[in-house]
Image (cartoon, rainbow, N blue to C red; front, top):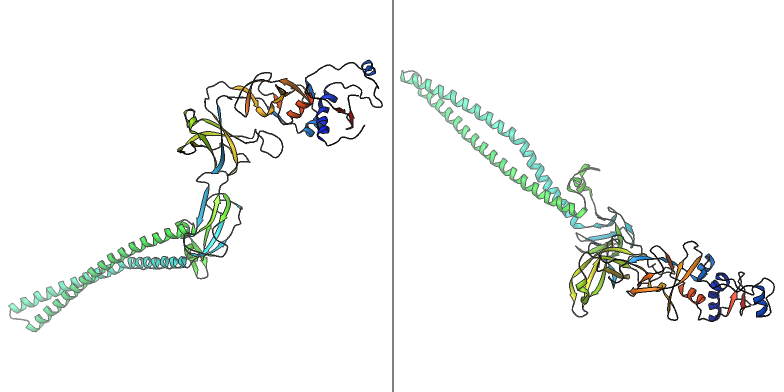
Length: 487
């Protein structure tokens, strides 16, 4: 006996172990000595019975990398498969720009995951100071107009009272003049007294005229102040709305009183810098400026991407457009038909409905096909290539099918290995009764049913170990030692 080699011949013999040392009763493998002749072997042990079962214990499955795939029902003939890639939806990317020119202080790092409301960067802008001054001026004008409006009723009431008093005084002088005129007719009184009374009455009339002019001027001033207050209010609201857009706070929030060194002031008056926050969750994809740099107005600073907002874009042939329509069921499948290694397992698929693009490529004679997955698998990333399977006729009867890579050829005979439902440590070699295939899946007309497991990865090695056309070079013992020949 000698240890196992790593040559191709030895590798083949390792595979042979599964069938020759476990599936059947091997001859000439006693613990201490072996028969010296073939006749003695036949005399000591009965000839093993032929079987189509292969022992695949855990150690063999691990060494050969055996994996299993379940038999499923598929519309193989009605499935159209086209290549494509993942890409972001138009709504997946958001750019955060400077609203004003100023210095930018970045608050996040590239590839950081942020939530809605997370601060992204701060902007220190002289234009923001100017806007604050304009808000303060508009607010002062509103306050002045408000003070005038509060004093207007008092001023008007004072003029009204003075007017009433002057009118009473005018009435008194009118009575005095009438009395003096009556005395003059009777030959009494003096002309000087009558002239003085008339002069006083004229003075009262002048005062009344002046008062009425002042009252009219007060009313006009009040109307002018009201117009100014309305204009200042409109200007202030517009400036506040602009400030709200710049800083990301609601106008009501900007008017919230905040304690400061000079007493309570509205929030907009206390903000020394503009802090830009994320509107929704995402990942920081890239920056448009460096930290601390001066940025012009509307410069791109941070780009956020929502990785979950993906769609699959495939290129279908224009010749297949007769079978394509919006709303067809579609499946996004990884391009590698395996369940082992580092590749994406073939059963890790995504589902959705088909949408046909609005335009086609006249040169390549293709048309864009789009599918937004109902749920996104972990391997879904922008730029990752995959295949799109489209069921063109959902009314067709599904067929029992397995991956085409699970079928091996022993000469001209197609072979599959079905896992024994009663003993998971055994596989049953079957001659495959194949139907139609689409290049990736093949229908089986008999021998299996939905839910059965067949060997996918490792099927080729099992085929070699059970092949009747391959020369067997030796066998292994359970302790790992190799024996050349058949004894």
